[in-house]
Image 1 (cartoon, rainbow, N blue to C red):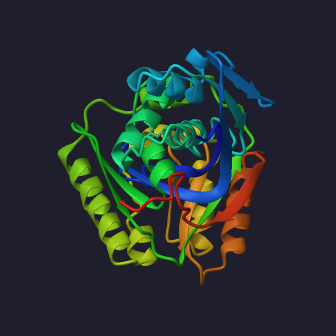
Image 2 (image 1 turned 30 degrees about the vertical axis):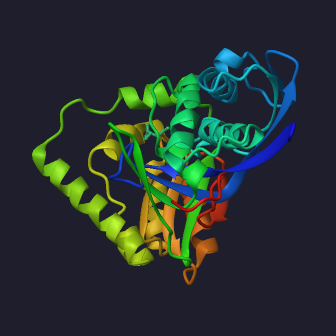
Length: 307
Ligand code: HSE
């Protein structure tokens, strides 16, 4: 019987432009690592990072609580959390901790849950930080690659991304509101024009086709969102300039990563990725904003499973 399991989960980008709350992509920029150890009783969180250690307020804590209850597990669990993903920047940080925890719990107790169940438990934990459940980041972080999230009932479709797909991410050094995801969801219009919905739908469909055909050009050229991005971009200083610069430097498509404020440019391995990253940093510098830039690839998921 194992008494201790360690699982690493990748960062992820949600939405990919028009796929709000539906698309997710696991990316190898950053990772969170979770170690679950059986103890006598209770749920105990150990971390050196600046995150809540009350299990009710911690994404990993909530996942353990929900899974313990569901599978009537009496053992106590110690959760050791090592954050590698910057929290609050649209890189799926809370989702990764939740994803790694669900996968580790499954291994620790030999549950052999399928992908959808792991995603569902991970999502139940992410509620702690996002306020609402949405599965785009957790699905990518659990399963890896590109994911399409269908809900009611939850069913995640995973597609292996093209091997030459690359992303340049700029994470701006700005203060983010405490409940950032909630705040940035609050600015999205409740009603949208039919013509906007058609534009987003056509681009979302093309993105799926791009992943199926393993074609970064189709993916990148379809990263266009006329609904959520225009409503949120004021929350990112210099966004328009960052986007313009990245496109001029050769990026195929640029958008907000998840709920932001990170900006993500899609490209392919043959492009000048350093030039794109530098152009994005210069765009942020326009508003005196510093940023960290990362060039990355799609990642495998915490479960490292194929659906
Ligand atoms: N789809 C979500 C959003 C991802 O954009 O609000 C953020 O967690």
